[in-house]
Image 1 (tube, rainbow, N blue to C red):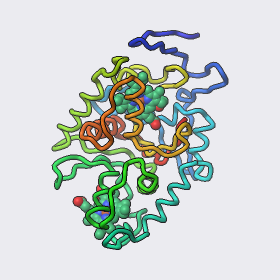
Image 2: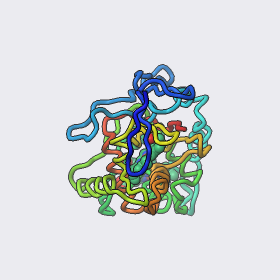
Image 3: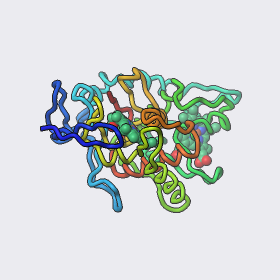
Image 4: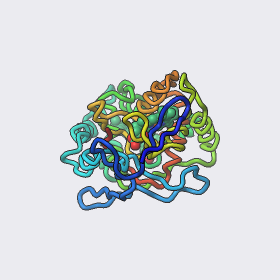
Amino acid sequence: MKIYTKLAGTLLASLGAIAISGGIAFSGADNAELVIDGKKIATKSAAPEGSALDELISGWQYALSETQEMQADDFDNPAFPAVERGEGLWSTAIGSKNKSCADCHDDASVSMKGVRAAMPKWKASLGKPITLEQQINECRVDRQGAEKLKFDDNDMLAMTSYVGLQSRGMPVKVQTDGPMAEWTDKGKKIYYTRVGQLDMSCANCHEDNYGNYIRANLLSQGQSNGFPVFRLKWQKLGSIQRRFKGCMSNIRADPYKVGSDEFVALELYVASRGNGLSVETPSVRN
Ligand code: HEC
Ligand code: HEC
């Protein structure tokens, strides 16, 4: 049975949770399990106190079953060539200081464990939170004497996926109190503000309508625990903020700039909505 709801001029086909037309299976309701190398990664978790969501659900639960399977096997996961490149870059000396990441951080599986789970992080020296990409750029510029990279530069994605992998399976745990409170609030305001020609907010899709279809797309909670994600549509990895840009463009709003205070605040707030969900980096999405 199909129930159509009209939402800000967009027709959403709200289909029962289980089976839908065209042979597409939504597994969100069947508690599909993500197991990688024999290790179970929880794709649902209890909502943190004060959450607007009843339960936290990873985007993996909303992916097509073939896509889910790709992510469940590192040999099939199309992000892994980039992860391997990141591993190579980790120990390659670069810049005017001729230093590698490994020169200072040694074994990434030890030094980078848990780092991705806590990003964006408060940076006292700058008096603001920074994302993983910004931290890597800080090390590149200040400690290696190399140039900054764009968030979606292939070398940056190789590094964020390699560093992120070291937290796979660990719960997202971003700080939202202390100096982060003001930034979390700023991100929250952006999340709930209707923008663009379609006059919609992030919450209209990812809070009010997850589990429903919008055109051919099954809406998830818009969680960030899998980033960078390999999107089959892009045929490459993409940063969280690239996804934000895409979502804003889709509702015909002017996206903020990647790396802007607005997007860092939004990234922090979105991460905080997933506090407790497992890091899945690098995940695969349609
Ligand atoms: C010369 C030494 C040096 C080099 C080379 C270096 N870093 Fe760092 N890195 C540091 C120091 C020191 C900090 C802590 C900075 C701070 O807290 O302000 C840090 C912090 C970090 C963090 C944050 C860790 C956390 O716990 O949140 C990440 C991620 C990181 N570096 C990644 C890299 C990567 C990737 C490279 C190579 C592209 C690299 N670093 C190269 C010295 C270095
Ligand atoms: C018109 C509906 C719509 C709006 C509004 C919207 N998105 Fe999305 N978003 C989507 C669709 C469709 C996808 C792909 C399917 C999915 O994961 O929901 C998506 C995916 C995402 C993802 C990736 C989730 C994953 O698991 O990989 C994130 C993160 C995200 N959106 C964040 C946002 C943020 C932040 C905003 C507000 C700036 C926003 N979205 C606004 C429709 C929307």
